[in-house]
Length: 432
Ligand code: AMP
Ligand code: GLY
Image 1: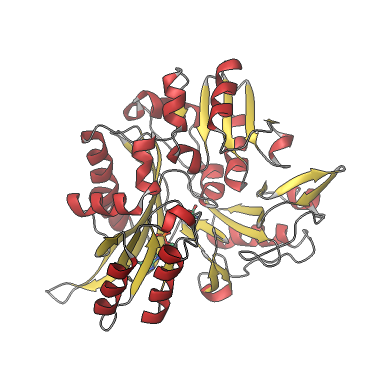
Image 2: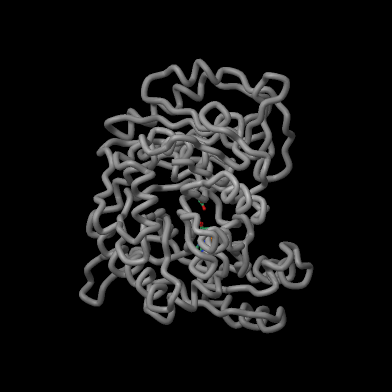
């Protein structure tokens, strides 16, 4: 098969690495890829935003399967355009990708079908939004979210009324995130532990994958600004089978079912960002409930980097079964091992940072057993691998226990250096 993978981050390096292992994969193209991907696939100078160019390439090069990494092309309708010309696409249609493309859409759907999520209101005018915050804040902290696609910068978790009013002003009046913030969702703030729960789905059957814990804040101890993700690990000891079964039953299954009944079946990876909230039942018994913070219409980044190395089932077979609605026939299996990913970021990320800085030590890191090095923001410049983005490298350690996997990831990290690099030292430090 001739496969086209769309994207160029760490998630796509992990996807490319996994796809390339499939016996069914004869040729792998990646648009646009990065310096790491270039060593295992043919990278194309096509942007993930250029839907017509991606479709044209798929048609002219007789591509048999397209796998889409990031959300933007899906929200823009890449899967629909490919389906129209008869090219199978692993990733949801534009209508189904609204689950990530519009927070108002996702929240309204959840409210309608009874999926647990924080109470919310949707606003198209700043005055109404501010009035609501003024009523709500004395007794309830709120989160202000841009409705549209905001590349992880659209959620403002506010500690004071003033912060929340400023967020509304930034999004709606100053149009700080452009069109994405013209409409906002204001929801109650939840407290608990976050969990990423993903599943492959063909619109009917869902094949769950092991739960992952992602670290969103820039610095140790969950301090500093939100990022795209500074590291993650799986399995998650506190994500008990009962909790996962409950999240599948109350969240993923009804959501997939609702989209199918509405005529936009979801095919691809569905990712629920959950908050596990502790509560006391009327009986006095303590229990934990999963609430949805957000849906994503794709693999997480860096969640994919820990999940794909543990995936035993052929990824091409999963993608085909997903697109063709045959997932019920295909068991999806994972190795019962642990994986820890530590992200190496550019100095200054998630704010401004420099690029073009040479990276040393990649070969030494890669030679360590049970270590995988996935590139995110890297490119080749005069024969040297240099930085080209905020998140630069993903070091993945594997092991029979989380402690061993963690040790392997940090052991690999010790070999790598580039000027200004920063990373968290507490990924998967469960006793910290
Ligand atoms: P989102 O873009 O909706 O996933 O939000 C990004 C991050 O903001 C989440 O991963 C959480 O850390 C935080 N967040 C979002 N919604 C809430 C909420 N209702 N309560 C507390 N934290 C939230
Ligand atoms: N790691 C969070 C995300 O992919 O959205």
